[in-house]
Each structure stands twice: as C-alpha cells, then as structure tokens.
Length: 133
Image (tube, rainbow, N blue to C red; front, side, top):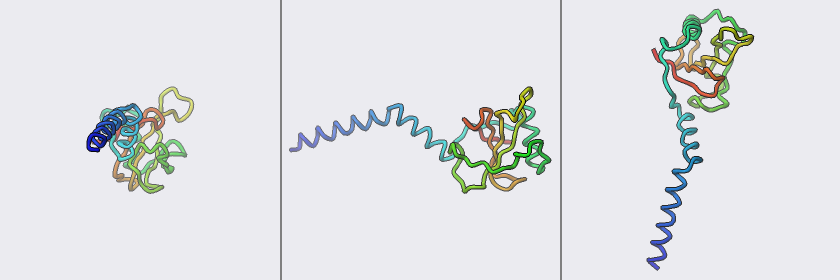
C-alpha cells in the first residue's frame, strides 16, 4: 500500500511540474502578473515629444486637442491594476502623420491633475509601461 501511495505521489509531482512549466501556465502567470499591476517602466524623458506634451497637459488639466481625451478607460484588457470603474482616464498622444488619433495613449488613474499613476501605450492598449519621473 505504501508503494502505491509513493507512486501516486511521484506521478502527481511530475504532472504538476510539467503543468507549471507549460506555455499555458506561463501565459497565465504573465496575465496574473499584469492584472496585479506589475508593469514595465518608462521615464517621462523617454516618452516621445508628443507624450511629454500630453503628460504635461494632464498635470495642468488641459486643454486637450481631442474630445475623447479624459474619457473613462475601462481596462477591459486587464493589463493595469484592477480598480473601480471610472478610476482610469485616457488621453491621446498624437502620432505625426496619422489621420486619426493613432495608437498612442496615456492612461492615468486617480485624481485628474494629480494622478496616482500614469501608463503609456504605443500599441493601442496591447501593452503598458508605467510612467515615472
């Protein structure tokens, strides 16, 4: 009986190790990490010129070029820390040569002119980097 229990334990251990090392488990881990708020970082000075300008406008409270600037960002992708609806607002970072708003945005959470955190995306919400001073 002890031998059967030892074999079951060994098999369970191997299966668990394989499952945790699988691409699916790694993808889940990556998704969980993003949902918990871990993000890459970008310094204000590293933002494109238009990003720095937008960031300054956010701190001043505007005026903003696009009417959708300042609208609620829903965080449907769940790449930013999970907060209550209305916590995040998005702002356009203009893209030279683009006919529309382009893909670049800054998303900030917290009070409008003194946000708790701001994030930059150059790929229309596929990834974010936390803006630091």
